[in-house]
Image 1: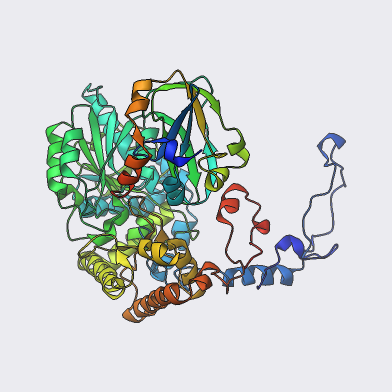
Image 2: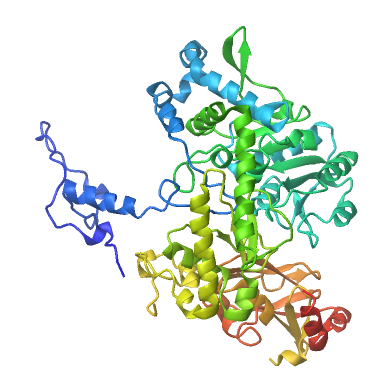
Length: 488
Length: 126
């Protein structure tokens, strides 16, 4: 096994990468009370040692720029470099956000305020809603903001009896977490055998105690909710509001709008749908959009346009700030560049190709890896390794690890919890047919190995610096250097 | 414990009355679905629980799952060993991997739970 030394295992005493200027002020010792008892355990390295160490680590990276990354529900699409070059323009990258808050300096950051204003407008348009807000720092933060807006709406009508949010069993775990953080009880909506919300069970749970319903559409089974319009209509009939989790928006971009489906508030994952770096490659952005009813409660401050000048407005009914300034501004800027670069028609093509690619993978694999649900999928396909587990002792985890050996990032496994041994594959629109074929060939080869030589898969990965981890120990004991198992 | 003598819930908890103390754990089916268990959050001793109320949280490499009280009653003892060795549940879910003991329970609710035969029948439907 190709073990990498940690930076603390390299270097030698006295080695140094910087040569400080000679001391030109009197040498002063720290008072003894502030001095350490033992020297800092820092490694001493030359400049070349440092460069080689980090270059070596960077080559171990597994990212969209180097590998196919079909991590379901994460939309790991290619991040266009035009977004990077615009985000690194000094006028944006070096701008101090505090300038936007000082009226006298606001004219110096009109460009940045225009980006916020215009992107919020575009997001509202794509959502089919009235207004957008860039503040939330990532998806779950957007959920929390959205649920707080729902709470503020009911409070403004002095409707205090609504203490419950309904959430499907296939939802991302962040949905109930966000609702609970905003002070609501959560009640789980069961899925039916087709993988959609069980409408009758939903109708039975709906009532005057329900503040809102959080839906992901398409859901995490990769299926469009067939009853979404009826679900929204029934919620509104009972005075509840509809929350759209935008994690899977890449499937319907420009094809249908959550606002038109009856949703009152949604969050975007700009880092998923609009191709900004994520998954250790950069922070997220959980911008939201809201319908007319919730717009008065949006976080302050709002960027407004008065006589061609961008200014800030502080609304009286606002839930207050959710983040400093305008959220992860440079991430939002990249998303703005992305939207302008592809244009309205481009957005539709994105979802068409995302759905096409997922169905291509599904069609090539379904004879060998059983689909969790029948029929076509949307932007991701959900397979199950349960048959392989029963017949050959090969679990979804083994498949994930075996893919690493074959040069692919693993799909999402064991999610959603509604499906046993789930493998959730989201190829995204940016992959070519050749890449999809290479991936499918690898999956079919793993299926053959599962039948003919299952033991070989239990040891995967064998080609990476770290082999099969002891998962339980890894979860309990974060001393990573001690993790590899001896048996492989 | 002999699985044949236990009572069961649809959420895959088992429970048995041993001289008025009701021992509770999770079934082999639940353990198999969870995978390797990494953490168990136990309730406070003395806590009164309604039936189906959260009694413990079991976290595995795959997911975190709530464990529900099969019947109402008072927590009499918890298996502290699980805090250091949660994988006892993986190794011996019907024995050393027990989770909670209850007393002063609702005996009618206990009588209404599935026996081993009905639970095996139920497993064929899930």
